[in-house]
Length: 312
Image (cartoon, rainbow, N blue to C red; front, side):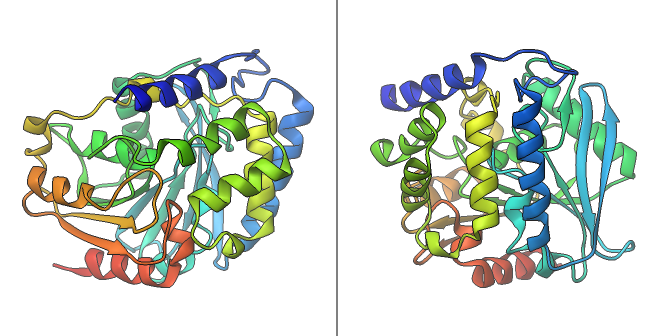
């Protein structure tokens, strides 16, 4: 547990320092860095092999950037990305999900992406309000949430609200939800990349977090590198406390949990804990996949997600 807290403290410290206010942007200290990052974000969007629109939704916490795709009358599916991954991380999945679902990919406002925060930090209550304001704007009800890594923790937070709009919950190697960091030494490559960003450390990071790093398109790799080089995200990892067992047992909606067999964050044993906490949860180990399982094994992950969402 101490090692987990040390990792989270290190990341939190790194992402909270050297932040200056620039047009209410607490993530990018310099305009040049932000410009370069946004250019790479737009370049990564070319990997989306589907028609989409980008919208900015005004909330109590600033502008939420949302990428919308799929048929207008499709059941709503909301995508929540991992730390610094932004909504472009869904490039291997967006086409499959958009065939029949109306998909909303939301950038978290205090991490690198296109959302623009008007506050320096958000606690869990703020996160709930932020996302619910977006849901209200689009008139979303009976939402299926698909979330990865840190986004999985946020999705669980939303689903645990006594009154919520969540129909189904899909968690892809959710961080701090069923367990702490499994392989601390390998996971520390993320901290090293944040502290001293370089192409070599970027490659090392993807080697640790992905089973098939060669599958990750160079456009996305460049964006992720610039996120670490120029961004000062504040994911507030220290606020990601484990949910009490009594709370997790209140989850009544269908839940699917997927974990890669080579994940550095979650050991496959968390699937046992997931079913202990949520007796009706479905779980699966994705073979030959790391933490980036939605990229490593995109066809299989897409198939499992869609089959789960299609169940009545």
